[in-house]
Length: 81
Image (cartoon, helix red, strand yellow):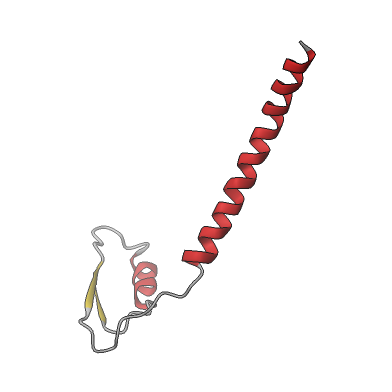
């Protein structure tokens, strides 16, 4: 009976630790493998894009939204608000 309790205790204690460690290592691997690298910007001669901002009755936040849209790194774009 004591062996069974020891096994259950070990499972209840060690399984969450193992899974937390697995998720942390997996998250770090994903971040450094896929998200950490700077995304390639398209060539400057590529087609442009339009950023459309619907702003009906949004006087309080439209300036900040347009400011953020103008800070994009895309080479050829227009903002339509």
